[in-house]
Image 1 (cartoon, helix red, strand yellow):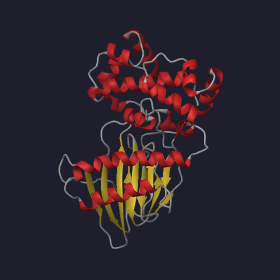
Image 2: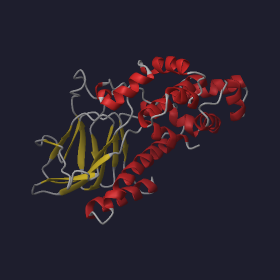
Image 3: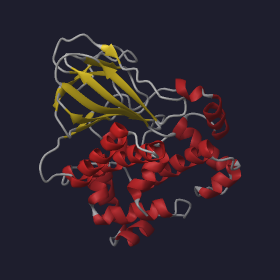
Image 4: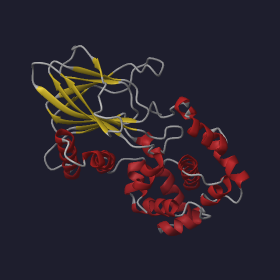
Length: 328
């Protein structure tokens, strides 16, 4: 089981959006709050990323310092906070509003005219499950900046070049290719973050550690299995007590606490994406009855499984609080 892929499958909602942006200096773009994660890829030129007060929140600071970006740089704003991109400090700002060539186009274009040097940027966003975010999302920094440095993240840089070429030239079939490339870009960004976080604590350490990785793979492969700490320890190759200490130290929560969280994440995806009955979903995530499953689901999501499904299908979940909008 590829745990990272499994997590991304569960937390992503729909397809990402992206736009090919050309801006001639002096220019400034304003990006309001995104329900998910915003990203920018600089293909040409330079710009500065600066925070804006969050209109969705209490008006406090957004928690990150301005970042200077250059060609090949990639930045992921993991909580979608309001921000600007600009050619220089103090320039007038224009709201980011790309246009699509046709309604079903998977990407848009935006042009900011001017007389100075040109910057070309891919701007986009991923829709992510925020009601109960996976611990991996909470461990991500407010702004993940991956600069284009020689010899680092070759796969990410190759993806950046390919995505830029598809958006720049718009060849036949680009409408089918671009969404998949943008999807893959998120994986490459997270891979790069995991490599750069080697030796740190939290989920980057839990995924990198062979002991906890084996246990996580087991839980993700068979979430319905009646796992105990002892059984997970045996899979990981440690005694019950040694495994529990190691997993808790790295992942930040006890093994069975994470297992319950993951079961509810899987259940939420099944409620969202399928018409399975509550009894079937309960069985799929390891509960002997729909009643026991509903009780556990309510503890995690503060609503019943049926209420969750109804909210999703009526659009009411858009008004639900984003529990990961701020660190901690």
